[in-house]
Length: 195
Image (cartoon, rainbow, N blue to C red; front, side):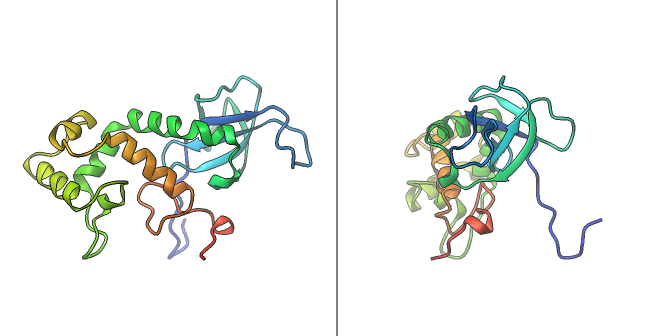
């Protein structure tokens, strides 16, 4: 039973491997293999201990509450700056893969997004989406809801690649530079600098 006033945190079930470190981090006291992961639901960055060395960069692994076949232990939640250079390099492709795999969920973002306040719409949080793009998106979805990314691109010709826009927004949120978190969880409190 949940305590009143406490919102149950949505946990990741699957994650994409961003990097595999066979002897761990150089700053770690113990030399054990670790993997850096990207959650497939809320794009949570995690560090985990694998069960073996069969994990490959780009593959999906179960990290939920049940019996895990490839991950032994989730060590911690990471922020963007904790990622290795290899993981940072792999991140855009991993995010793109997750978006393509869940196309309907992200197309629905374009169909259902609403205003954040009287001056700003949540779609304006996507890179390079200004008032003109916003107007074109809203008019097109009013005629008929979008069915796919190809449909968005065809009906809103001024708009860049919708997948690329979402990837860029997710990376910006993961870096902790955002006032609004549309697609990810806000950074962990210990990593968040409010300057």
